[in-house]
Amino acid sequence: MGKKFKNKDLAARLGVSGTLVSLVLNNKADQHGIRKDTQEKVLALARQMGYFNMVAEKNETAPTEETPGIIGMIVPSLNDPFITGITPYLQKAFSSIGVGFSIITKDPDDQRFERLTNAFKKFFSGLILVGETADDATIRALRATDYPFILLEKNLRTGKLNSVNTDMAAGAQLVANHTKKFGYKNIIIAVDCKTIKYDHPLIDEIENALSIIPGVNKPVVIELDRSASDGETNFEDFDSFLRPPFRAELVITLHSYLVYPLMTHFRKRKLRVPQDIALISMEEGEGFDHLLSPVTCLRKPLQGMAIKSANMIWSEIKNSGKGKFKRQISITPELIIRNSCGNI
Image (cartoon, rainbow, N blue to C red; front, top):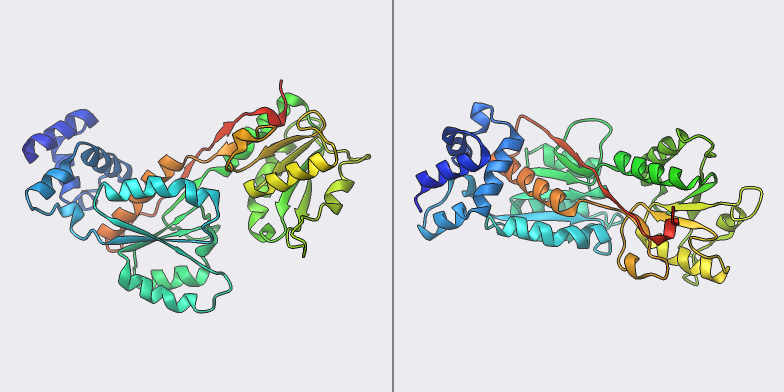
């Protein structure tokens, strides 16, 4: 099937002109002011229909694929369910265009990391910085040389950078709307004491969403200490709010890994979930649907985030990190309703 026919075929399926498709595939879209989301749709469908495979069979190099290279993703930890969940989708997205993909972990206490940034720039065509790996020093080092990079699950209050995030404000609203159906008044927000400095924006979103529900008391934020010498989580402060006068009816936990010690603690105290206390997680965790009380949680749009991230970093690479437009994409998560929050 010839390239010219492919262009027309793509144009027909997308409802755009053949000229527009040609400009995108020949890496001239930015020069003609074609919107980034339109470019992404053209490239995504071109990959799906085998356009780049056809070019490879002819031993040609597509203008949009001139420097495949390797994309690096720097993550805070490999134990994060978000990382393990989105990685297969990213691998699939990059392999479809012949791009390599590698993951690097960043130790926040490693003073050598700033020096390693320069080495990464020599090895990778572009970088995806996940969460708190996108610190000010790393961002400054990359921007100083117009190096192609994007942020994933990292919101910046100042400055504009290419980023793809879960819309946690919308997620908090979904949780609040569901909470309203049960009439819960006394709510605990459980957080990890080690991550509290990063969690304040999400805590504010949850509190704001709950504040507009009539009769709901201001939630109590409890920091759980998981660093005890015996490996046990300290629930002393938490337990004081399970009793009168507050007597919590619902726990909203910010991190999926806190669900497991919470469930264990409830069993020790002979508290039934959801009969005695309800539970909702702002993250999905492994095995949530197999627990004795399956856990209601927010599910991040992993596939959509992976596709957006792959297209965005590839666009940055094509523009040598000098793209004029910086995009902040937020995708609404899905509320997975299970038994732990109760039955209406």
